Length: 79
Image (cartoon, rainbow, N blue to C red; front, side, top):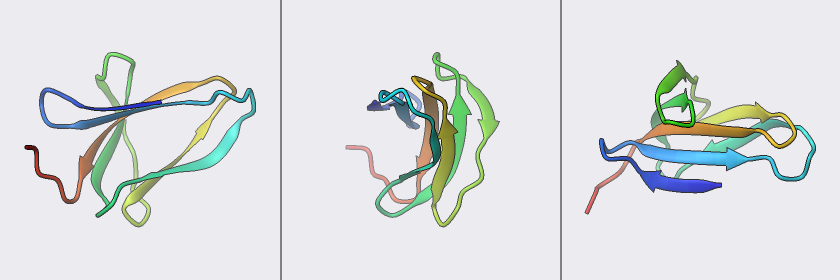
């Protein structure tokens, strides 16, 4: 898994299921919550909007699957 700040200010989070077992309803959240979330391809191009649940996202992962998300944090200051 990896986290980075994209050139355009989005937070990019890549997750990887490494145990070989499907993960159901995994959760990703940030301190202060999320404003928006999009699933992207590996080149970080938006693919689809993701609904927020209490400022977080939930998603499923197949065995060894990689998913990448672009996130808008509710509270964030770039320094």
